Structure formats: structure tokens, C-alpha cells
Length: 242
Image 1: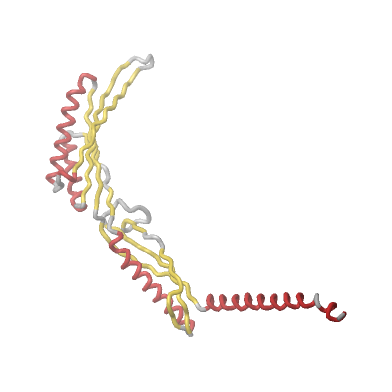
Image 2: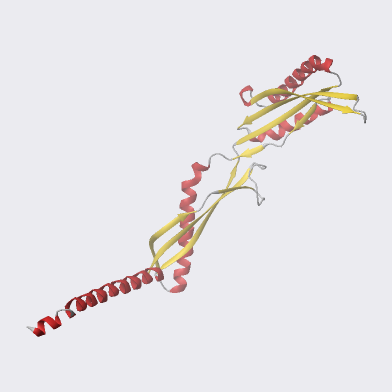
């Protein structure tokens, strides 16, 4: 009886030791398994690029009439209306429709010039109008701008602002570009596997980068040119087999 009583505290200790060995063995084996998985994979990148053309253009034309007296403002409004109609007519002659042309409101501005005694010596009154063009006829914009420049020679105070060209059909080409980038990633993985004497298996994981649109020949910006480049990079992890 005394021997049983003396040995009984050793039983839980032995049990905990056995559990500890078992758990430790599990984590060791799991670490080895994870290491094996990591060693039997290849992380590669695949690139896809497309040359596209803008399908929408936004363009703003500003025009100004100026007077030297407040009494001239009614006549300035009439002159501003004439200039607006001249610009709209020119745009229509270039091939733009009425639905693509949006005349805006007229803004009024006043400037005063005073001497050292704060006596008014001159004043100017400005009426500034804007016309917006939103069109899918992107290649007509250059022709329209050239015709508007000729209005300056006729005495119109016109600011022919730089148009912005946009590509809005990215969703139409996304699936094919992702497929192409993944295909190129597999080609890179095959090259790696060939040098390592192994074969490429299935995809373990894949991450798609963001799509980037740039004007052709430019490092930054995507609104100045009609021609643009679209690119996407995918990061793919492939399993490798013997």
C-alpha cells in the first residue's frame, strides 16, 4: 500500500510529459511540412500590356468680352451671346452635335485701378463664358480646336483649353489581360523549373495587381493623349513537382 501511495504523484507527471512530447512532435512535423510546401513552390510575376485609344474626350472653351464702363454691361451681354453662338456654330461645323455641346453660365468680374490717393482712374468689366464639349468623337477634337483658334483672328477672346482624353472601357479587357498575365507567369515559372530540374504544377495562390493606364510615351498622366497603354501585373505562386 505504501508503494502505491508514494508512486501515485509520478503518474500525472509522466502523463503530462507524454502529452508534451506528442504536442511537440506535432508542431515539429507541421513545421517540416510547411517548410516542404514553401520549398516546393515558385513565386513569379506575369505582365500583360495593351495599346488602346481613348473613347471619350472632355474639352472646355472659355470666352471673354470686356468693357470699360458699367453702362456697357448690357451691350457686353449681347456681345457675349454673339460670341457664344459663333463658337457653337464652329463646333457643329467640326462635326459635334448639339447634345455634345453644353454652354455654361456667364460669370461677371470687375477690376478697379486707383492712384496713390485711392481715386478711381480706370475700371474694367468682364463677362466670362464657358462651353463644355463631351464627346466620343475623340479624333475630331484636334480639328475643332484648330478651327476655334482661327476665331482669335476675328477678334474673339477665346481660351482653347487642353482637352482631357479618357479610356472608359477597362472592364471590357480586364478578363483577357488577367488571363494573359497569368499565362506569362506560368511561362516564367516553367523557365525557373527547367533550370531547377523540376516541373510546374497547379496554382497555390495568385494576387492581381492594379490596372495602370498611361499616355503612350509618358511616365505619368493618362489624359493628354488619345493613345494609351494599359498594364497589369499578377503575382502567382505555383506548386513544383519532381
